[in-house]
Amino acid sequence: MSRPPRPRSQGVISRDMLVRAWGYLGLVSAALVLLTFFYVLLRSARTSAR
Image 1 (cartoon, rainbow, N blue to C red):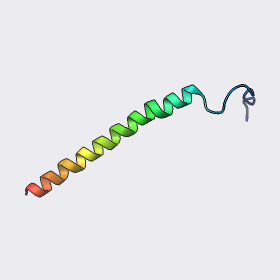
Image 2 (cartoon, rainbow, N blue to C red):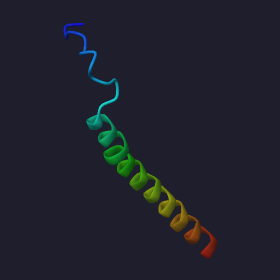
Image 3 (cartoon, rainbow, N blue to C red):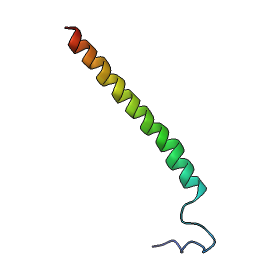
């Protein structure tokens, strides 16, 4: 509450927020999903080979 309200001309969602959300966080999420997928894939291949 220490900041003044945003100007009426400024939108609620900014370009910087979209770039961060879709670009950076999307890449991090995709990398984590792929790492988890390959970890499970390799782990199941080792288990079935025994």
